[in-house]
Image (cartoon, rainbow, N blue to C red):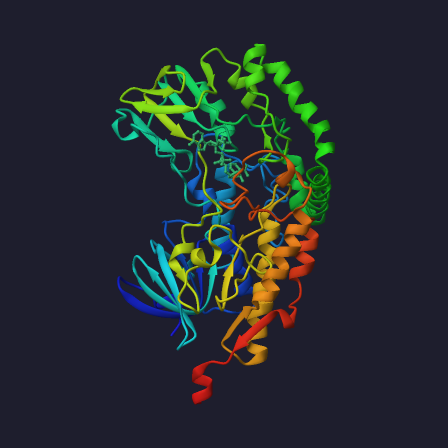
Length: 502
Ligand code: NAP
């Protein structure tokens, strides 16, 4: 029986060869690759009612990708119709919906199925995946739910007593009209710098709470003319060239992150922007970062600084003390009146919410194995967790290029490992602990001296132990080259008990 028709109702138990969690770039990319290999026995478990992942959830005004769309898209599904160099969220979401339709993925998706946990059954050699609408058993489990899918709202004293509205940027309340209201924005990360310019125009007063000043450089966004769009449609090779050039430029950016001294040149560009837009020297000083650029995610915007320079914006750099019924109070005791509080406070990628709920061969969870510092062989598989694949797993994030490239590289490794399972005639495969430790040590070596660990800042790239377990610190082509083959000695396999009986 095909899993695609199996997982139908509440509390049903279904089977599939492969279960995929999430239908964003990672989950869809995996599904499409399986289809192209003529593997149909898979199911996608999606908690929401639509595909798109982070590009479905983050619909805040101004949301757009800060990597050029020719590169931030599947290599096998170029979109000649991107309207801008950096496509807005709605276009990226529509692109993912089209991909799901075009590659016939929709029938495989079980919408409204939120995965709450999974455990490896060492008897049957299957993953037993628990969802809010029943259990599914699968030989392999692919986590495509991404590191930036669960927003965090800090536990501010008094927040529960706030009488206005509050929401997170990843769950934007489009029903709340901000026109003429007093708005407090907490955070100045990649999301906030995109929505602040949009709400500044509508708000009466915008209080921007900045804990750490971000480095912001111009994005140079511009429309793609209809002529170019037509040219890409008629001459697909032209778009491939455009993509290759963008890719090469991003690879060169890596050199800046590896040589923090070189970053100083780029810091000058950001300082020029600050001088141009933030005329008040005292405010400018408070908005000038005191760490090396790139240590936290480098932000690209043409609109943020002009918006912050407007008279209805105040930048508060004193720490947050508490929230009262109608205001947010800073550590200096100043109460900033607010009708609405918007949290641009990001996510916690180094503490993935599913990690405490996924138990491996020894019954211990990923979180128990990781103890605050996620590790995986090739950023994809974890010793003790057979047939589990983590797309955008530990040390596969990027500070300098498109993560879609990384996802595609990982998917190729997944396909090779699935083939290896069949070739060896076994039902379970996992990396050896030594191979995993070797990869982690190699990442550490490559990380050394980069701005991500030597830039003197606190960033979400760092986990609770202070290790950068988020980023791949090298060229992305090196990562892909590593994942284009299976190093057989790095994987250990287990014969299925059923095979022994048979
Ligand atoms: P973020 O980069 O983690 O930024 C969170 C912001 O909230 C930071 O300014 C942080 O200050 C502040 N903050 C967090 N907790 C706080 C607290 N308790 N009190 C005061 N301030 C607090 O989150 P994000 O902006 O949502 O972006 C997350 C990631 O999503 C990005 O790094 C990026 O990878 C991705 N993203 C990508 C795009 C894109 O265009 N491709 C767009 C948006 C987001 P500190 O800096 O002091 O921690």
